[in-house]
Image (cartoon, rainbow, N blue to C red):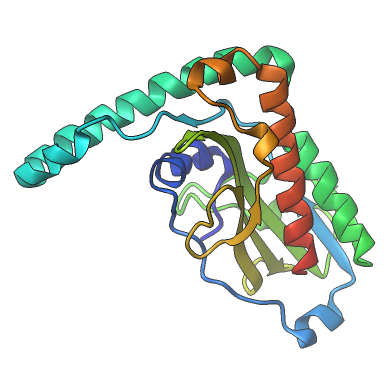
Length: 239
């Protein structure tokens, strides 16, 4: 399945809340596949509508799990509501700074792929097939040896401190998108995420509290751009 970038904010609920996510199956790029790939269509990633902030688990929330499925369902609803509230608050604070993390990702990824020797053309975001809700690669104009699709998100999570988290899923597909040449997930965070290639985040982007994060949106923007840029270079190095 080719994940729509529009679904990534929902995916980040699990990534930022639990420090893990359902990452794609890792498929390394084989020497044979790489040898025949010269031209690449890089599908542009759109700017997310919101920037996630996971407020951390509710104090005492773990006690609700003692009540089984009902307690877990109650806690899940509470945590989801808290996540949405925090994310809306963070988005309101940082949007005036114009984070443009998608543009930063697109440009960083394109330049990084070009530095690997690929002839890269940026193509618009793909429409979704109505029947499967997968990206429709038939809409790509022109012929390319491979198509690279990705989905990203960048925000903050409350843990020992308020820390930046950037995450991306990347796939390199055949020209008709019927074959997967490469698949992996990449993260920029304090702690590694399961099944994702990890880059350590810079401690200078940590905040002691949610309030200090919200009062320093310019530094938060720098952290998010640094995160997606690092992840883009990390992804390109695997190709």
